[in-house]
Length: 429
Image (cartoon, rainbow, N blue to C red):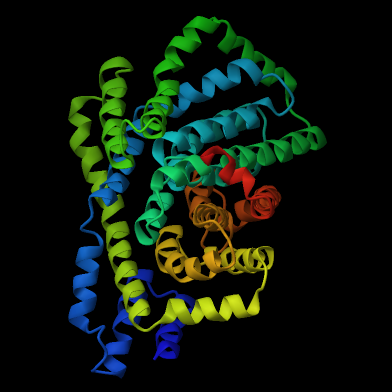
């Protein structure tokens, strides 16, 4: 029975069948093979509906909405200016400012795609104007956009917490240092690249002088409310004042206040359009989440997690060997599968084996999401490549090839977090 389920699932992935269709068909295979199986079609239907009938899951569309508001409101430009003000004229200062912007924007949106789109739409034209290679600029933003799912609040962390019972707040806290480490690794490669290939210092200096001519306090005042957003959202969660779902509500209200009434970059007439955009973004994700949860519950009835756990603990006898093998599998899977469904399907199956080997469930979640975040920029289906490539009117594959050194920097951070769990767990106390 399980062989039939995984065969249908893998064939669907290889044949590029929509993941929702693949999950739905695979979930009902056991009932078709064995009519007496408890996971009937009615069971699957109820599992899909009850799986998304969860208050905590409301954080996902709310963070998507706040990210859309921030993107339309030009928040990424406010963030970029404050970083460019200080380091814009240093070697690789502009690319490093882009990575810093992605870090801060990720702390608002919780989405890798939203981060790449919002930051890329603003910074890629600036980098090209300042003389940087356009493919390098697109590859940088595509990779740094993956920070959106590592730096809290993170939508994949919410999904992991919902399917495993692990505290979402703990996952958010544990994602801070790995996110910063990834950012440092990306900045390091950007510095090496700029040292090797050179920069148009005259254009960069002129741009920096223009920005600094406004004066620090002017730039700071313009950026203040944007910088305050992650402080309010994450501060509320970490102090225990609000839950992640309540923080998502606050994020929406705050983004509306600053974009409509303070920065005045969005009119009230635009709000219905943003709501429609959010529904269009969330509806496919909600369907995928429901189907993935239904699929996972069918696998549980078929004892798949126990079988897979026994196989893994019998094959891998140490924490490191298990995690490294998992890294390889997830890196490959991330090339063809979106991070959300992958987390919902795989986390419940991998968690029992990980716990049996002494791996902290929070650490497992961080490593899983880091692996799958790399899939944002690995061809053929790296979604961030499809976001940034059109911005420079270049093929996705060309941007993907240029992104490989950045991917290597991301992998170095992944290996460090895998080998040294303290990087993700030290802030948990």
